Image (cartoon, rainbow, N blue to C red):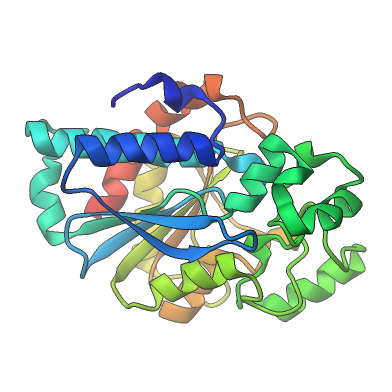
Amino acid sequence: MLCSEMMYKKADRKTREALIGNLLMDYGFLSRDTIGESRCSRPIDLLCIGNRKNQVLFTGAYHGMEWITSLLLLRFVDELCYSVITGRSMCGVKMGSILNRRGIAIIPCVNPDGVEIQINGADSAGDYRDVVINACKGNTSVWQSNAAGVDINHNFSANWEQLHRLENKNGITCASPTRFGGEYPESEPESRTVASYCRTGHIAHAIALHSQGEEIYWSFGDYNDDEAYKMARIMSCSSGYKVSDTNGLAYGGGFKDWFEEHFKRPAFTVEVGKGRNPLPVSQLDSIYEKIREMLVLAVVL
């Protein structure tokens, strides 16, 4: 399926279904599970390759406008699987032998409702249509949250209370296109789905792809592990992305923050590309070439 025309379309559910279906046909060793559902009952897919008892977790599309991260992850899956069946190296690494030791779990789209709303409009929210219209005043092009107006990357239980107070201070008190953390941590099925999978205990470390800024965030609170910092520096050197710290309304409530605080293991938020969200699919190739080696190294490290 390498470089399929479908890869260069906006990553709504129809496009993702077609891409994942082709991947499953091409690579019999790739598995797909539905590990949860969104507010609007859309499936949250998990793709797995290799050792399922020791995995690196890659996640994307926490935000509606950041659907390009789904395409990047599916392209990575495609190239990785192709390298396995052909025996070719990927960035100088024989992935087949690596996968016996370290598997890969991919959730291409954490927030399928948010992506659908951003691409196809408020009617995609079903019973939540009026919530969406009222929250964004009809302008769904800026939609980042899930169908209930909750920002999934503000809905994890890491510094959630302090972040919630800061949201209130900034006038974000209810359903919103972005940055409303919900009524309580993991109030949303999307965040619960990701957290539940992590609680299986098989995840060595995790990567959350967002857009944009070409930055890597690696620490949170008291978690400043030397090994995690070394990993961030290696990822930075391979991609040219800057190692950065979060602050303000970006501090706390996120998946990376929760994973580090809860498990005391490395996790990284990687902001791919540069420009204005949603990044156009015309940037897919250039972004992928920049992060390709970084993604491979994230498996190996």
